[in-house]
Each structure stands twice: as structure tokens, then as C-alpha cells.
Image 1 (cartoon, rainbow over the protein chains, first blue to last red):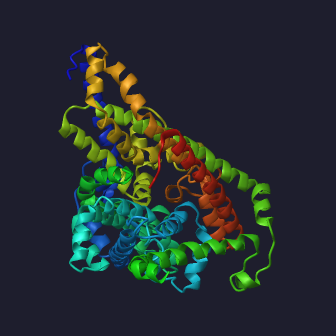
Image 2: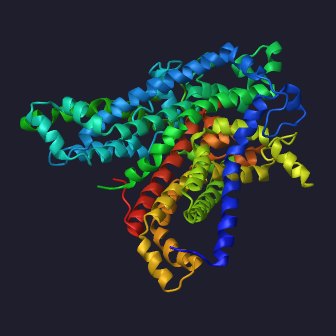
Image 3: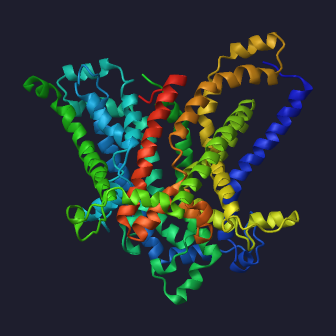
Length: 292
Length: 298
């Protein structure tokens, strides 16, 4: 195809400029915060920092990483992410394997699917869930953060749709060799679906790392906050009493460069996995929307 | 029956952990909604708390804040729905015109990024850059001679900021589905149009847009089903008492009144009202999407 008209050349030129500006708008806020976090406190207070540090210093990071509350929440955030992702992937993969079988092979499959899908449509809401968690004595435990969201029905549907694309001959051969279902799931299904499993795991990790609200309601004590919750109460709601800050350290906490450093550390794991995510997610979304 | 179990027990067993988790954490709270019809007190439990019928629901509609909250939810949501549809379509059409693969990939990398950052991070960033005291956005406005705007502290600006920042976060990611459809259009259609002397603009109007229409209808109807979700995460990270009158939505209201103020029954009633309407809307929207564009999730 050739587009040689003058109008089209003008369009291409302005389109390129427009899209470049749009891209910049998406990342500049983050770059500004990064620049702030490496700037001196005086420069930040004087509002002269734009997209490059002024009076370069790593002071904010030194202070942040020397803050035991911050480190604790960083650790809890990592812990819930790993535990939550592993648990969720194991449970979802096992169920998806069974549910991917044909109605002929597994009668009753349809009933299970509706039991799961119904939870996407209707939920008891915030308060009954909170009452349940407290009745189960899960308040202040990591299980309150990893068990309720473990069954992601959306991931389950994506995975079972993927499992259905695996040729039946593969598993038939394994069954003839005397393998059981667990063995087939482990040695036939998992190796061929590694890319999808990796994609869904990454999405689950991002979900857990970003979740903050459950931490806020299920942890009665800021000692148990995962990083996202800690950042919410420190930076967004600025609730110093909740975090139990003593007067002499308030000065540090209200410091803009330290806030910027904390925001950036909170975003860093996402930025690190982002290239891997990007490689897969377009494929994953298209894959999920393809019906068999 | 015995033969059935002998053949299928491994399937049931593999589903069991997921089923148990769903029953405990999703279905049991469903029964917990009965407290919406009680004056629930934690120390009395569900069995011991007095029943009050529909009193809490009546209260929601007579209470001035109740109506305001429903209105805020609908207006914020409606604006988000329309703008979150139009901008991604326009963006996808523009990006689809880019011939240089490297540039296209670079743009995609940048615009998809905000989708993956949480509202805690973005809320923190926005509080800083939108600050009326030297936030970078207001500094730019001042440079053009515009007075500083209190984006997050002024009621009418707050709604605008909420809608705009949501579009900013999601437009790239929402465009993926349209881009995938555009890329999938058979090039022969464009070639034929070209031979007939159609300009590029005419090709977009008569080929690209009609062919993405089915998916546009699907996305629009499905988001209509979630119109009562105005963005809990986002608003909880951006709002403050100054803007409750314009920014408080059903979900944030349930959280504050129900959990923070300990009105468990009232909060549950409001949440149940929302879930119920939301359920009906989702069912209708899926039916509509199926009717209009033959869409099914599985």
C-alpha cells in the first residue's frame, strides 16, 4: 500500500508528534517522582525539580531503607506476593485441568463452572467478608490476604481455554502408558502451557503486590501492613497516627523526597517485571478472547 | 453411579481445593448479607441480632447523603464509560496508521505502563504533581498565566480529575483489544478500496470503523454492566473530606459508614443494594452483547 498524497504526509508527521507527546504524558509523572527522590530536600521544597535531579543525593533512599517499618512492610509485601501467587496458581491450575475436559468425559463439569462463574457476578460485599474473616480468626494473619483472592475465576477460564487447545493425542498416549491424571497434568499439560502459566503468574504477582485495601482492613496493627498498604497510609492518607510515628520522626516522614523515594521503590518491582509482562499480555488477552 | 465416581473422582478431587475456597470465602459471605435486614451487633451475632426488615434500605433513600452518593457514582461512572471508550478507539486508529514498527512498539510500551501501577502509587504521584503549592502541573499552568487549581480539593475539579486520571491510566491498555481487531482486518479490503480511488481517510471511515464496531459494542455493553463501579481503589486514594460531596461513591460510602463507623447492617444493606442492581445490569449487558455481537465469555 502506498500513501503518497501530501495530506497523508502531513498527517503522518503530526500523528508521530502527537503519539510521542502522548507517550511522554504517560511516563513523565513517574520520571518527575524519580527525579524528586534523588534531589536535595532544599531543591524539592523550592519547587525547582522537573525531570532531572537537582542537587543529586541518595539521602532519601538511605533514610527509607534505614526505616524498619518500611523494611518490614516491604518484606510482608514480598511474602504475600510469593505465597499468594503460588497458592493461587496451584489451586487454579488443578481446577482448570478438570474443567477443561469435555462434557462427555466429565459429566458435572458444567455445574462446577457455574458455581465458579456465579462468584464473578454476585458477592456478599465488604462487610460480610470482613465479619467472616474475623470469625475465622484470620485477622492479623497473612492468610487473610492470600486465601480470599486465591481462586481467580478469570484466570481459571483463561487457563481452561488454553488447556482445551492441547491436542488430545498427547494425553491419550500418556494414559496408554499407564499415567494417572496428576501425572498427565504434571508431565503433559504443564510443559506445553508454560508460557500461559508464566503470564498468569505475572498478572497474579502484580495483583498481590498492588493490593492494599485488604491489608488495611484485615490488619489491625500497622506492623502487619504489606508495602502497598503502608504506602497508602503514609503517603496518600497521610495518617501518621495509624502508623504510630513518634514526633521526632514526623519531620522525616513528611519530607517530599522521602515520599518520592518510597513511591518509586513501591513501583520498582512492577517496572522490573513489566518487560516480561508486555511480551506476554497482548498474546494472553487475545488468547483469552478466542473461543473454542 | 459407582461407575461414574470410579471414572471421575480424580476430576472432583482436583477441583476440591478451589471449590472449598470459593464456598468459604465467596458463598458464606453471601449468607452474611442477611444482616442487612437486622440491626447487627457483633457481640449478639447473626442469631441474636434483632430483625428490622427493609429499614436500612428505606433509610438509604431518605437520607440526603444516600441520594448524593448514588448520583456521584452514576455521573462519575457515566463519564468514565464514554471517555474510556472514545479515547482508546481514536488512539488505536491513530496508532494503526503508524508504519514504523519500532516507533509503534515504543509508544505501546509507554502507554500500557500506567495500567500496571496501583492507585496507591499513582495516588501518591498525583498528590505531589497536582499540589496547589508548587506541584509541577500547577507550575506549568502558572507559566501560562493560569491560577493554580486545587484539583483534588475542589469538588467540581475533583470529578474531572478522577475521570481524566482514570483515562490516563487505562486508555493504552483498553486500546489493545481494538488494535488487535484492526491488525486482523484483511489487507485485501484496503487494497481494493485503494484501487477504487479511496483516500486513506475514506478507508478508515468505510472499512476500519465499521469492522471494529462489533467489538466496540461488546466493550460498551460490558462496561454498562459495571456502571455502579465508579472506581473504589482510585477514589479511596484520591479523595479527602473536602470533596465528599462530589466524590463519595457507593463503595467508599459503604466502607466509611459500614466499617469505619461500625454501622455493619446499614453498610451491608447499601452494598447489597449495589450488588443486586449490579447483578441485574451484568446479566442484561451480557445478554445484550451476545445479541448484538454474538459475544460469549466461554
